Length: 242
Length: 121
Image (tube, rainbow over all chains, first blue to last red; front, side, top):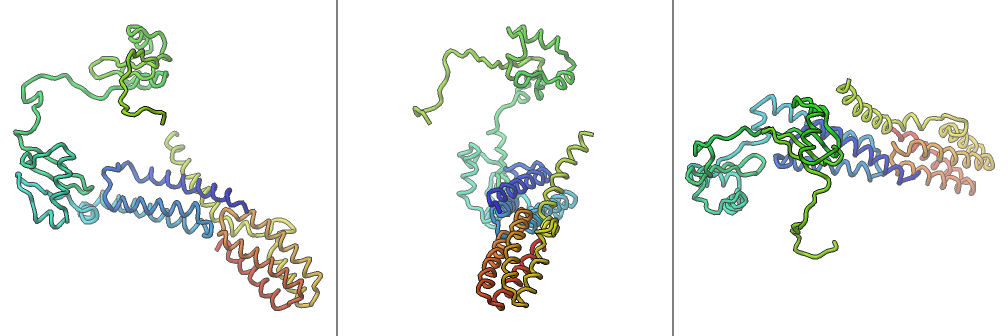
């Protein structure tokens, strides 16, 4: 019995099982995770680790345990998507902690949420004066969403009646020296047009380009491999090497 | 087609993993002449009962070889302790046979058989 080999095989099983099933669970971001999701992640990770190194147990029951946890999450996700009440019951609800500039002490007490927590999260949002806040909502994920009083909100072009051009998402045309044909077609252009545009920037071949996108304004953004920077900005405050 | 492949690849992986993990109950069975653990155990038991200690000794060596083969096959799906405990029992059984101890030999033989039965259950 080769223990190292057994561990490698078990590790691969745990790794790909987690990869496949977490992909199945979806794209919920870390920042959106509830406390339950967080604990769940730790539990699932712990079972996967045990599956890898606890050779004293059969792998099959441990794998079943792992899959059962993941499937339970999947079932809960489906239930909460389909049934709003279940969603509220399981995940909880966002709570208003500042309403019309007034701190909701009762709601905060219920959440065991301290004033120091509130001020800390406000500072994290760049707000050091609590009187600037009109509404603050403590989300299910524990993050604080803040609406400032109208007099403290930044002026937008709309407020100033300034017309702005549409700005959407740029389309990648060259990535790592290779033209992305699908995207080029999507923006109704061809290689001939692209080469012409690159020539304008003094580039003869796409292999010189690391990254190029077509902005919604029609402008082509090009970044070459060779950046020709004469004086580099060094943000480090400590001489290496490290 | 791409969609089918995208679903099929993880599904094949999962099925493959399951097969690896539940394979021990199949892989512990005999596939050749020298790896039939229950048959060898029964033969040793008969030898021990008959007091044929030299035959029992040969049988014990056969059992040790058979167990090594089985261990190699089921190592990815069986618990390590189960395999190790059975190996220890075989070693102890050999000592009992050497000492011509009937009770000890039979006890260890039964334990090996029990370990063999537990694999994959």
